[in-house]
Structure formats: C-alpha cells, structure tokens
Length: 269
Image (cartoon, rainbow, N blue to C red; front, side):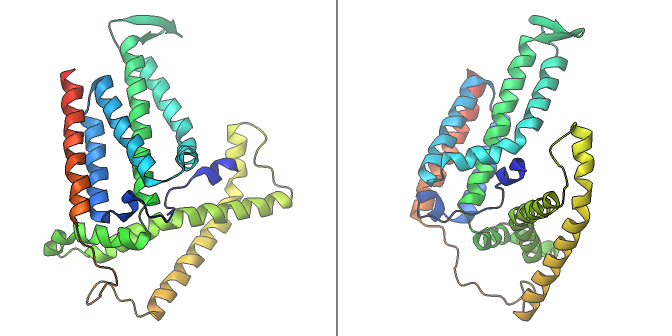
C-alpha cells in the first residue's frame, strides 16, 4: 500500500549540516517553541513568518523536499476532513454560499486555511527533528530535559528509552506490515478494490500476524538488552556527552527571538 511507504516518522537521515550538528536538547526546545508560536500566532503575517523559518530550517538541514512531502501525504485525509468541518460549521458574518442548508462563511474558509497551514508546519518541524537526530541522541536529550523530574522519583531514563524505542519502531512496523501485505497478496488477498468499509475489513487479517511479529520483536529486543547487561539508567555512562556550545546559542537565541516576533507581528497586524 503506497500510503504505508510514505510514513517516514521515526527515520533518521545521517548528515553533517548545521541542523544535524546542533545539540539535540536545543533542537527539542526549538521545536516545542516553534509549535507554541504556531498556536499563539494569529493572521496571515504570523503564519507567513513561521513558514519562512521552517523553509529555511529545511533548506539548511539538507533533507530532500521529497522526503518531507512523502511524510505529509498520509495526513491528507485527516487534514481535508478537518478543513471541511471548519468550513461548514464555523459561523461568520460574511456568507459566501450554502451547501445542504449549511452556510459557508469567509471566516470558516479562513480558519480552515490557517488550520491546514498550522498542521502541515507542525508535522514538518517534528519530522525535521527525527530526520536530523539519531535515536540514541534523542534518548539522551529527552533524559536530560526530564532530569528535574527525578526529584519526584520518576524513572526518567526508562521513560525516555520507551519513548525513543516506540518512535524508532514506527518504520520497522510499517516495513513489517508491507511484507505481510505482499505475502497475502501473493496468496490472492485483495486490499485495494471495493469501498472504504470493504478495504477496512480486508485489513483485519493483517492484525494477528502484525501483533505476533511486534511481540516477537519486543521479546528479541528485551533479550538483547538483557544480554548486554542493561538494567536501566542507574550507574550508566555515555560515550557521547551532550554539551551546549557557541553555535547552539548562535542558532537558539535568534530563533527564539524570531518566534516571539512571529507571535507579536501576527497579533498586531
């Protein structure tokens, strides 16, 4: 199924760009700040400035545009469905036309356009984080950022490890699903003909082998970690130590000021 192959969340593309070399903690903070700016910014100017920053970050990262577009394709149905709901059900003073006794207003269309832009930019910035950060560095960064919660006796290292493993398993499970579908197609299964309900029912036979494969992979991973004497974060050392350097500050400070400017400009204009 082409849609499955388009899901690229969790993949890592090695590189030597400025974005790749940034401290992963800085990248996580910038992504969270960018998402906050997206939801706080209002109006066309705020979203336009946010889009310019994202385009610049994507260009500097060296990630091919086709990879970003492929990652967005599986979201099209959800985005279009949500946009239609916004167009049909958001009231406003400037009515454009009527569809099945539902008024389509200029305010509804504007809200739908902003929502589409916000979702696409949100997902794209998240993809840039996973595309340019290895799972190991991502785990270390999450653990460092969650370190204050150790005072509450939370298993910070284990939580960071679980989150990263879950993210890393997404492309693996997609690849496994594609293999199972190919094997069942060779035996006469049909996943592409019929309406949506028939296609959904045709996917049910995939669930059992997929669950079995997932549990098998989880068991193999647990055995491998145990054989390597993994017992959580207590007493563990790291080969690569995270250090925030001058280039990190040179990117982080202007970026945070830029996000503040996006919010301010979007609210004033």
